Image (cartoon, rainbow, N blue to C red; front, side, top):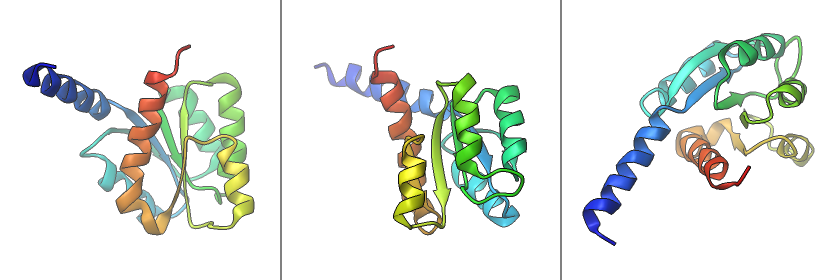
Length: 142
């Protein structure tokens, strides 16, 4: 393969990832701000909400590519919000960003999620989880 062509392909993939639209949901304002700051250089953060009901409304209004959501939030938890969004917007990828390491939460979330990242590992794993979710959607035939 021509090395110039190969680097051009890598550049195009990187540019496409930067255009990935991310919606964030977390009821902890400092965590929400830190997550946005972590992701904004790599992706397009299109919105931030602090509860499950607002997440559903924002998902329909903003139509993001990926939703990064906490599990434990007021009004409706992230898993139930994801279920409701998935019914009407099946193309959205979900990444659960949570403090819950327990297998019960993980099993329930993974049925809906493209990724499950512990908040303590966000700096190292969140960006790569989003990129992996987007690669899987590009490579999966419809």
